[in-house]
Image (cartoon, rainbow, N blue to C red):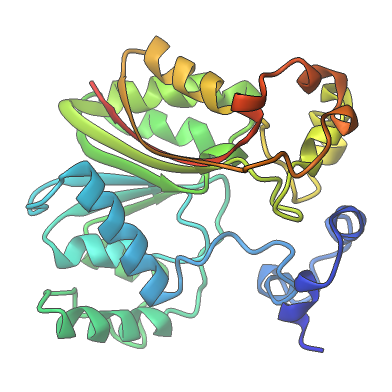
Length: 290
């Protein structure tokens, strides 16, 4: 069985155990080695079809076009610099923010992406095989900041036109979430727009198994550093925090389970009193404006 297929047959509880063990082993072969297991992979933004689709959908939802001359932030670019290249192809610059340096150092996928973009009538930067990550960022007039929420301190007030994220906000440390919302509001221009797709499923088995655990256990450093953390901030709380910092919120889509994937009596006490309407939300798309 290929390593990349293991995650399809491993139950949620065993994945937690594997991640706890692997996260504490020496990174034999580096981060890229563990990507093959599907255990520590940070998204699919190094996949040109996926990255182009995600970028296009967020720009369409934000009504951001024309993009020429605009500045974008992607929160959580994951393993690729695709957003920087795609944005540059439209004449925009970008700031990519993550909590660590996860982008692939082999940049050949970006050469293929440029060819893909040219066929769509765009004008991508001239990326060559010998170009490093830093070279490509310069060619794209972009920055890659890897200090998590603290990275926002490097961005000037009211300097950003568009902020977007794809299944990332649920991974922001619970204690940092409100600060992240404040920083997004601070750096957005007066007519700036944020587009976020948020996935509230457990990222273990696609259910609500993360809600089985008490806050004391789940928010412990031991769990947070094991590669499966989500902040468990619920739909209505996310909306409330963005509104509190000053954004107006337009909920474009709210996707719900017909029935909870986990009986309510299996939830930790902190979640048993939440409404079924709120618990049934598995993902949602929102647009935020100043």
